View (cartoon, each protein chain N blue to C red):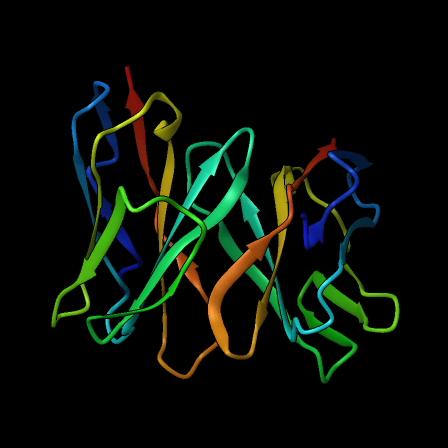
Length: 113
Length: 112
């Protein structure tokens, strides 16, 4: 039972354009969501997070949107850069176990120069 | 500020052996959690420790265990290794009241 889903295994975007990575969840009790970027053989790098009391959080080129009614979140990267090429994971947690993260399967983003 | 460190970075073991992995959290972080990443199952939560106590545990067999020391450093142990235990094992640390979780570089375990 996959509670956090990233349905697109891969995404290719031209440098300078917007990258939109999507994530769906099924557990309505999740109240905190995070995005991580990961290179092979390295640990995930924290990018941005959002609490369920918000619908948007912005940090530089990264913006996360949360649609609670649709149980959907997305990560926007603008403008995309070749160095953004990596696997992106979304993760979710419950308030009672804040540090037990449930991860999606990841999306490989390739930014083409 | 130093990040999460894990040792060793690479490890090769044979079936039936046991292994101990070590993690040092970010200074000031008292929560340490462990994750397993495999191609088939993705990133899965193993367990979390806070103030030397296990607070949460994922759906893994009892061969997987861990502990945390008074300085917040943590170890995880896998006994009677199986081929399927080959994975990247990630340690993450968090502030006691914070929601951000920061990962170390991982230990790549290969079981032959």
